[in-house]
Image (cartoon, rainbow, N blue to C red):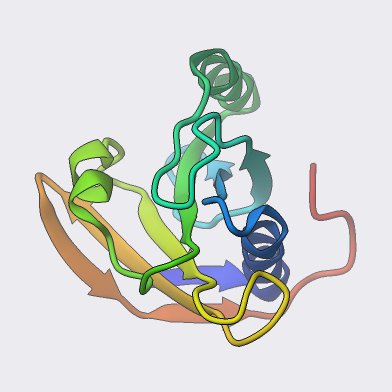
Length: 147
């Protein structure tokens, strides 16, 4: 089960809506050895595509260096699906390389990025096997979202 603060869910949805009609992507990191997402890190989709995302290799290297310096790991790896349901594509499954991460997909399909409902679902993807998991949304504490 993914346990995540409401402000972090809202941040993923806002990022997906902001980047619509292209896919948005990012990470929510947390302390190594734990499973609680804490620090929201939106990334730039270098592919600028409504059907795929690609993180620039320099941005990815910087992210992993920063997480290592903070003693963090990627707890949530998220991206959006602007034109399809919130379910991993074959490409999403093939690129899933963090076996301990929760893979969250935000679908903004429908009338557009600023309108209509969104769909947020979480999955574990290990060795090509996709398992959906429930999401428990926790109350958000006061304070800054980005650390």
